[in-house]
Structures are given as structure tokens and as C-alpha cells.
Length: 521
Image (cartoon, rainbow, N blue to C red; front, top):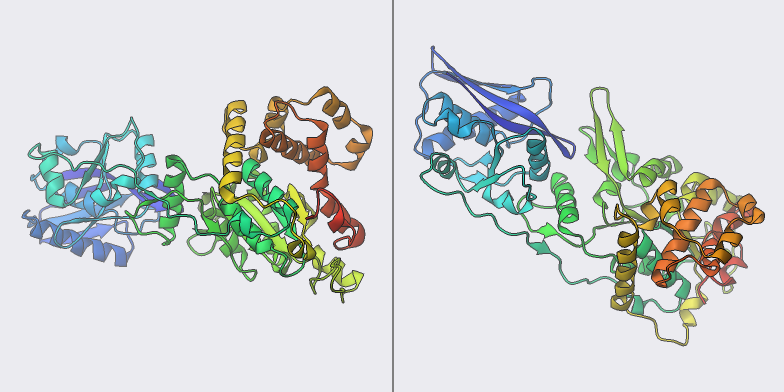
């Protein structure tokens, strides 16, 4: 007798349908499994045998052939155990075929028949819905990380015998737990701990509100790393949909146990400057997500940005623009999400003291030019906010006490609410395309004249005008202004002064750090 049950194979972060077929034929008793690698097939065969026997089911005394189709699809892991066992029960007459019709099953079996949590449940749920499956049977421990979909019933269970009893109507399915957020108290740097650097704190608020990439330039010890850590506390918590995706990504790379509580705090990733392109963007043997994807819906902090190899940094350009990483191989192409907030920090020169009023720079212009050449112009152009920090700003804090993270985070939250009301897609200003931005930004009459000034058009390229307008709109949202005013455009333009200084002088202009709107005061 032939029986079939649906399952899924994981490739990257996506799942692909797999048909688990079982055939019982006359002949010497045996158990042959085709479609899996030798090691995975041998392990699955022994687990299924022991689980069936210890759950009280009869092992067929005939030749058993199990096929996982399509054969050319790479398949690995223990998620096929449950589907193999159920199809085997149907083929041996111990389970009515009608009970399993069009159902998918995904889970690992223990030797005693209990179901163990597996990786990739979110991807399997979405694949089952797309394939119009009647339902998905999964381990009870994975139920909390599976999204609620009206078109796909989910059937969590704790063991193989519980699955069969529920399919036969002798018992009910396990109850599905609610989503449990895993949001420990924020223990990062509070903005109040950042002394001085008022413009750096302003840039952090703008970056968090509008999703604008931020570049911090300054001498050692001026607070670049502290500002990046404090920025994480300004990002809003992840909603359930975002938490599911972030938890799924971290589970697939082994940073989170399958079945663990969902992650509702935005991820923070800070790779070392010696990281390879595969580690930063993704790839390798059996392509895996890189740091850019691990920071999805969170913050990617690249400290010592100019110390990264230029070919590695240049691979960030396309993913930062599109919000996803495309890894092409000879037989497959994988897509990894990468909607992350990039924060870069670097010294102004190799010795770190160019432009500092307290300590002189020992680098010549040629060395500074070589140092900044490690960051290509197109990548530098991706940073909407470019801020120069001064070391003496920490020793001379402003007269007014700095705002706490909680106060600024509330302002960021209100600004994001205005963005969602204005933009149906719900994207931040920094994520909008030029067409989307032009359709929702309103300039005041004074700002309209300033924006159409020929001198400004000559100064900025099309991309830079688009990014400048996005930052100006975020400034207006933070100020609760219904329109963009000239002062918003002027402040947004000052945040792009650094790249012009680098292009002109081959390093940070010593006078740049004292200009209003660019340096700390």
C-alpha cells in the first residue's frame, strides 16, 4: 500500500514542499529511505523505528521504501521524522488515510515517541499555507513561534501517540500557547550617560525615528561606541510579526533554541573589523545569513569602519538599498532579509587625532586620503547622517541636563506614529523610495523655494536630494510639524557636510567639528 504525507525542506530561511511517500511491498523485512543524505537517512530510520515501537504501534513485517520527493531538492535535518511515521502508519493500515489527507507534518521524534522542537517552523507554516495544506501538525514546543493564519489550522502535539489519537478523534489537540515576549529590561547605555555631544544625541534620535543610517567620526574616547549603544534603547520594541521573523532567523543560525520565547527586543550586532564578506553579508558553504541579516529589524554597529576591507564594505551597498541580501549559486538563489539600521564609527585618520584641538595629528594628507579611500563614495553616500564628534565636548557638557533615553524614546515613538499615518506601507522615512517620498512629503512655500534653488540642485545629486528630503521629513515629524520648513532642510543639509570635507581635504576638516549642526557643542 502507498501512503503520502506533506513536509518541508529548509533552504536558507525559506521552506520548500516535500512529499513523503511510503510504500509497503512483499519481500524480506527492510527499511530503505531515499532522498536524504546517508547519515540523515540512517538516523531518521532508527528514530522512526524506535518511536513507533515505544509508542505501541506495529512495525510492518515487509519491505518498506520511503521516498522524499523531489529528489533533486537538498534535504537535511530531523524535521521529516513525524511525516515519515504518520505515512508509515497509513500504509500499514493503522491510521485511516482520510484522517491525514492534505495535512503536513513537521517535527523530530525522540526514541520514546515524544516530539522534539525543530528549527524553521515559521518558514514551514508559510510554505504550507502557500501550498494550500489542510493543516500543519507540529511539536507543542514550537507552537508559540508559529504565526496565526486564518487559512491554515495548526495542530500542536506532544508525542506521536497524541497525534494519532487526535487524528482518530479519540483525543483533542494540545492547546496553543500565546506569544510570550522575551524582552528583558534594557541594560544598555542611557543617553544621560553621554556627556556633551548634543549633536551626536540629536543624530541618534533622528536615526531611530526615521531609520537613517548614521556615521560617527571622532577621536578615540569621544563617545562613538556609547552613542551607538544608547541608540538601541531608542528603537521601539518589535511587534509580533517582526519578533517572529527575528526569532526565526536567530533560531536558524543557532543563536536561539527552537521553542524558546520570542525575541521582542531589536537585535544588536557588532562584528569585528576582520570579518569576511560571508560573515558580514552572508554566504559560505550551504549559504547562511550574515551579520546584516542577524541585525534585521535591529541595529548593525560597525566600529572602526575604515579598518574593514573595502571589498567587504562595498558588499553592503545593494542590501542597504533594497533591504535584502541575494546570494546566487549555480543551482539556487537565496534571499535573506536585511532591513537594518547601520551605524558606523571611525577615527578621522590612522592616528585618530586629525582635527582634535588637544592633540596634534601625525598623519600626512596622503595617509589620511588612503585611510578614507577604504570607504567608497557610494557607501558613504548611504549614510544619511554624518556627524563629527569632538573629544573636548565630553569635558564641556551643555548647561542643560541631557535627556534620558525614556524621554527621547517617547518622542521617537510619536514621530513613527506620524510616519505610519502618512505612509500606508508603514515604512520609516529612511526606507521610502524617491517616488514614495515625493508622494507624501509636503513642503511649506518658503521651503519649496529653498528646495528649488539652482545652487542646491547643483550641489546635490539625485540620490542625495532624495536622502536629504527624507531626513528633513523626519525632523519635521519630530517637531510635530505638518509641513517641512526651511530650517528642517537646512539642518538636514548640515548632516551631509562630512562627505564634502572628506572629498575636498582627504580627511576630516579641523573646522568642521565646530560648525553648528555638525559637531557637538
